[in-house]
Image (cartoon, rainbow, N blue to C red; front, side):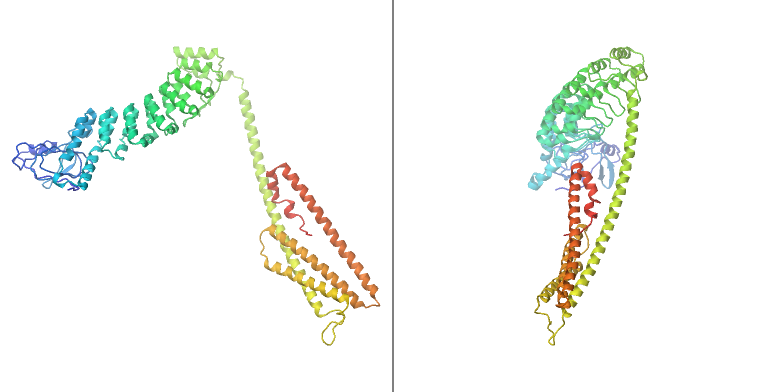
Length: 620
């Protein structure tokens, strides 16, 4: 039976004594037994609010401060209250029990894990089951016991450390193996106040067997991070644990890419501490790691020259000799840093390389020799000066300064280019504005042309329609045309009808089509123009044929003269228009080919306002 509060049987004390009350506060008071049993083993209670139902078995029970409450039956057994540090209600009074098991509020399980006493750990965890009521055993009861046992194992002290964390830190693999049986997935990832979990602290301490055991239990543990985004690989590399680093790299090689919040990765820290074997292992996995920089722009070589390990410097230079000239954000190369740190052996190693520029300048306009002369007088600084002088180092003031002139010239060129780019942007904006205005004018021209064509089409349709009812030669009494049997009338009738329906078609198109895109409107105008040409020709033929009927046989010469004049006029106009339209199209094709041959970008920019949009829109 489980409850959420701690219920204790009544406590009997000697009347008139204050020692019993003080003993209870100190956690050493014994509850008098109500049974005749002379010796009753105590129940040890920690600061747990886990609820337990204790039988009169006379065994000892240890419970952690996990937040569960403990209910003790009135079996009359003795109860010893230890490091609970919690509030206990005794007969309506609230008491606090003083911590007595450790300076960090450790439980008995913590202390056993610190000692590496796997037998004590097994006893503490095993007695939880022995103290339960056997008469209430069931699947649900067993699950509750497991929950209580997990709460005991996952209990943290004042530092936020579990018993598993303590065992992993001390390197007690047998205790770790025993505690893993009862640790939950959440419990194994509990971090202490420093941001370390059991796996991270095991890797940091170099306990390879524990790291391997934890990875077998949960392979995802290698992806955990601590404070400042520190990974187990970074912690192990910083401490110089080669076996752990190799094990972590074999398990998850991608962790080598992870950096701390300051931008430094595992190679930075290993190089700074001088762990040459770890540096070699990291570079074997990723040779490009030597070029990675932190937030200050420093590579692993910058970190290595701050230390005293020349083999690490040689290892990094062997991986990529060009990094010797990579500057940080302040313009410091590895030579500048090594000189400032007075690393004479490393300075000599750097100067041997052909890629090293002994007179490179920092951002504050200093060479390595300037830095060396500013150092306090010592044996190391004198050795560095001699080494720099042998390799031709000079002061910044003694350098010929073509670099400054080049920098000045480059600055001026950059300024001129910037001005030209700004002018080009303004020109483009102006040209785009002009193109928009041209397109606007073009659209207005198309609209005016279509409106004019509509009016002309209506006029053609009106004339053609009226000509049917006022036919040449007049009508007879029955309303039939007098000249209906003549060839001239038949020609007049047919071409007049074609002109009428063509004009009506143009009117329908103009009324139906919605204005929008310029290109589509141009296509509509081309079609309408062709239809209007047809209507004009048909009207002309109808008029010429009707002239034969009107003038009669005696004045047929007048009709022939009209036909000649009309035919020559229409043929000349249509021929001239056809010639210029064909010529303009050929010119546009040649221009398009020239534009595409020059530049696709230029052609696209010019296409917005080129002749393809604003040239005459005559059609044939």
